[in-house]
Amino acid sequence: MTSTVPAPVTRTAEGSALQAVLLDMDGTLVDTEGFWWDVEAEVFAHLGHTLDDSWRHVVVGGPMTRSAGFLIEATGADITLAELTVLLNQGFEKRIDRSLPLMPGAARLLAELAAHEIPTALVSASHRSIIDRVLSSLGPQHFALTVAGDEVGRTKPHPDPYLFAAAGLGAEPARCAVVEDTATGVAAAEAAGCHVVVVPSVAPITPADRRTVVTSLEEVDLAFLRGLMTL
Image (cartoon, rainbow, N blue to C red; front, side, top):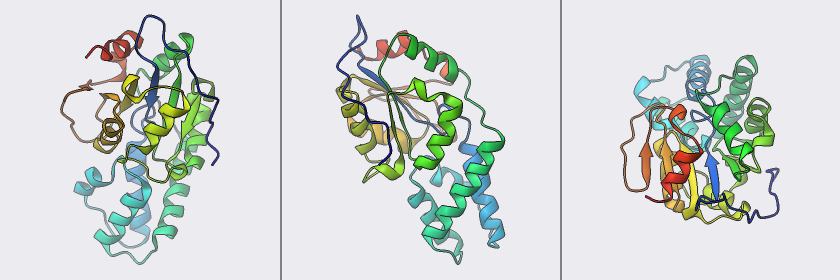
């Protein structure tokens, strides 16, 4: 495992019950959810198959084993899961090497959290090789801990990645604010017992108890995240 796992952080935000902020990557901090679908469509086109656009909602936000497995079954493509995983990761790496746009408000939010020394983790279902490439644009200094999908026994929608991140930061899950963009990520964060802020990227998500939906990260700042702890 190559994730950055520091000694547990015991400090909390002064004057707040907020102990840590845990952030998803694709579609939340970087505008890449569309990249994954484009790469999937391109790979399957080379295999002689056309993807149905309605499948996009099925594969978004989850572990690659789930999305790749679904696409193999749906298309009947003659390729193994291991082979497809390699092709998808390679294709995505090429895409982000050409362009990696940040979501509106992402850079400002990360800078604010760092300025106030809020323990922050990046929690993604993407593989470590992808995360390390994206971190060069996001700034690795913004995260005390990063968790990749291929470094936990069960990734999203299971709670394990968020429980691991909270423990690594010395925080109680109930005192963590998670920022997500998909139903799969929201399910993982809620199962871990965290407060969730959702910025939907592909499919709409409705508000619920301990779940706040916004239209953009530009609506989210430290005061907003601290306020979640009183809900």
